[in-house]
Image (tube, rainbow over all chains, first blue to last red; front, top):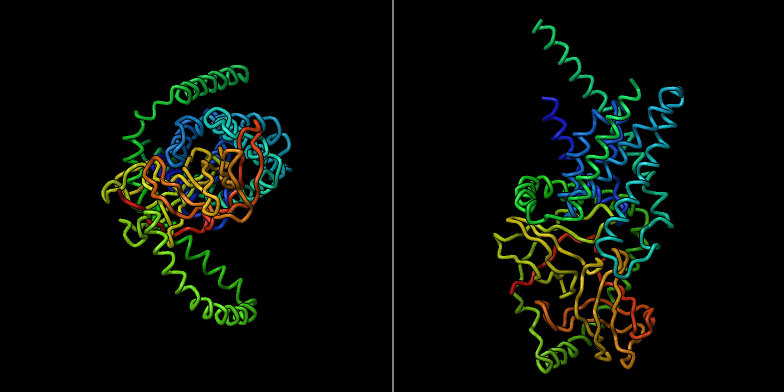
Length: 179
Length: 268
C-alpha cells in the first residue's frame, strides 16, 4: 500500500513539475519537486532505503523531460548519495541546527543537479553553439532556483512526514494483528 | 559496521551510475519509446487538467495584481483604440496590396492552411531544451516535422515527438531546432536556431547579404515541411560569426513562448 502511494506521489509531482508549476515561474526556473522528494526521503532514511524511489523518480522525470533515459536517474542518485553522506556527518551531531543544515544541503543538491543536467545535455548531446554563459551558472538562475526549491521543500516536508507516520502506525497495527 | 554500510552504499552507487552511463551513451531510445507512449497516455488527462488549472490560477492572481493599474491602462487603451481606428482604414489598402504580393510570391494564403488547433498541456521545467506538449497526437493526424504556429501565422516550432493523444513541439529557441529562414526586406537567407531556450539566432548568413536591425524574418520554405512566409521575429542585433565566415543575427520572437495556451499545427 505504501509503495503504491509513493508511486502516485512521484507521478503527480512530476506532472505538477511539467504542467502546473511552469505557469507561475519564469522559463527554466520551475522548482524541482521530484528532486525535493528524493532529498526528503534520503534525509529521513538513508541512501540504501531511498535508492529504489530515487531510480523510479529519475526514470519518471526522464520520461517527462523527453530526454535521454538515465540522465535524471544518474543526477538523482548522485544527489541522494551526497545528501546521505552530508546528513550522516552533520545532521545527527548538529540536530539543533537541523533545518539550517538541511537548507544548505538543498542548495547544494539543487546546484549539483543543475550542473549534472547542464553538462550531460549541453556538452555531450548538443554541443553546437555551446557557451558556459548559457548554463545559467553565472546568472540569477543559480541563486533563485535553490530559493524556489527550498520553498517547495518546506511545503512538502510536513505532509510527507504525516504520511510516513500514518503508514508506520498502519504497519504496526498489521504486525500486532498477525502476532 | 559503519565500514560495511559504506561499502554496500558505494557498491550500489557505482552499480547504478554504471547502468546510467551505459543507458545514456548507448541511448536505446527505441527500446523505451513504447513505454514512454503508454506513460504519456496515462499522464495525459492529469497534465491537461493541471495545466488548465495552473493557467486559471495564474490569470486570477495576475488579475488581482493588475487592479491598481487598471485605470491608467484604461486611459491608455482608449488612446490606443482611437489610433487603431485610423490605422485600420489605412490597413484596408495594404491588405489588398498584401494579397497581390502573396500571389506574386506564390505563398499559400494563411486561411488555406490545414490547421489543427490544440492546447498546450505541459512545458519543459528544466533547462534541458525548449519545448511544450500539446493535446493532439497521431489520432488527429499529427506527425513529426509539422510546423506549429500561433494566431496570425507566427511560427513557434515544429513537432518533435508524437504519441496517440499528445505531441512535443520543439520551440525555435531550442538549440536542436533548425529552420530555413529569410530576411523579408533584403531576402538574405540563413538558418534559424535556438540558444538553449534563451533566444533565437539567424545563422549561416553569407557576408555579402544584407541584414539590418529591425528587419522582419520569415520562413524561407526551403526543405522540410515549413511553408514559406511564416513570421518568425525581428532582428535585434547583427554580428559576425566566430569563424568570420558568416553573419549572425539575434532575432526577437513575436510571441512569449512561456505564455502560450492555444497553438495551431499545419498539417501536410
